[in-house]
Amino acid sequence: MKAPADLAATVTWNEQGLAPAIVQDAASGRVLMLAWMNAESLRLSVAEGRAIFWSRSRGQLWRKGESSGHVQTLHEVRLDCDRDALLLRVEQTGGIACHTGRESCFFLRLDEQGWQAADPVLREPQQIYGGAHE
Image (cartoon, rainbow, N blue to C red; front, top):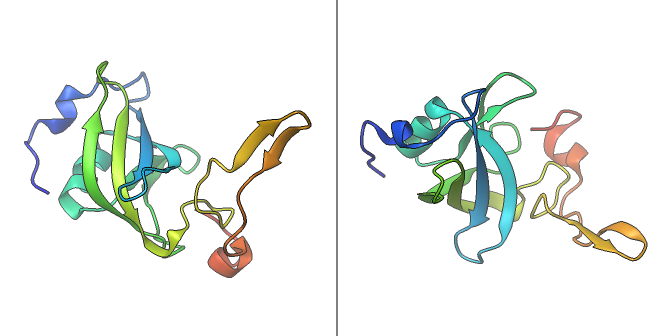
């Protein structure tokens, strides 16, 4: 995907220079996760054709799938009407986006008893990461 040189200038970044990025499966439309991007991660994502985020906890770029192998191939990037939130439409390698081993990070559903896990673990995190997680 080729992008204009000033693509990051159009985004309204927060005080930390970040914007939330909703990640959606391009085929099914399912929301897979939410992460944070800065101008560099947005430019690199477009240049490399894969989802690259800013890890707030590690204070560095995070190429999704770098330790798990669950790479997100970028199909499309959209910007919301306020220009402060991004939508990445991706193809999810391995069908697992969540570090818990589930398809989506949005696996908890609220019911009368509280938050319940509504989606199965497809692969145990220890099998994916061996102790560490993305």
